[in-house]
Length: 421
Image (cartoon, rainbow, N blue to C red; front, side, top):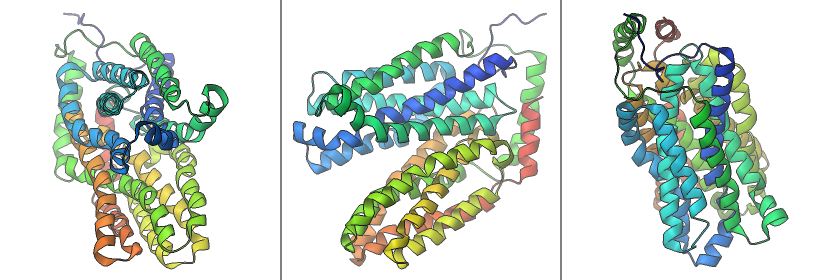
């Protein structure tokens, strides 16, 4: 009997124009997941002054999206398995847009934190569900499309951090920081409308009968996936990807106070600028070679070795070398993120990718959040600023060890071949 079920979000996309449109949508989703939150730090001094926030409250405001990702990614994965990843992205974008726009009105400390939590929940839902859709819609191009999603995230960070103040001063008024919330929230609403209109359709119900061809593909994945689980799991991937994020967040957190402690405050702007600016070209370079690199051991091992050497150089070499070491650390962390974001979709079969992607993201952002805190504890205990970078050196070692322990490239190739059946 001919299958008359509606098109599912578990079916690969085969029409070229739809592939292109969907890739653009996924990249724009990544952009908006970061532009909304990275547009806040440039105007944070104004927010702190106008609302009378303490430094503790200010720090918590910037950390809230990371905490939401760490806490909410796993439940988001479970929810995606139950109601469908496409719907989860729709809900996530709706929460993101609503939170971004509503926090611009009735400005109080409570409303700012409440709506920031709301949009952070939307980020957690969306970022967990997108890799699931990549796995299902693009089984032959997981590396490429995952890299495009990563590019969107990186570009969103860079653009929001770079132009928010310029937009505010030039068009909104010198202290109209609430207007920047509207500026970055409006594109999310437009994207939500485009997503509902153009993203491949999902079935009315989350469960349905599948065709014999799809059943064979699922069976082949079920045979292949236990081979992978013997060698890698969500704990492995979460700490691996989290190691790269720890390097990025840790360097952003500790370069300014480290330079202040050693009397080199003038070096901070250039070092931070290089650390963040290098993310974009590295991400674009990875996109070009993503299909060849994703799932290989050596890129993670090489990135870990680079970060380890760079952090040792940063604390021992003359301060004039700091921008170079910052570039190495920023590039290494970006390399890990761009490749690591596709690993859950590549390693896990369709039936478990949502849940295990959530676990992976929870672990990775938990590691990223914990690293700077441990750095501060080491500094306090040793009373030496260099000790703040110990977690970053440990992250480099973890990348080497866990990268070397990934399944071989041949096993990845087998899984991708099964996915394309």
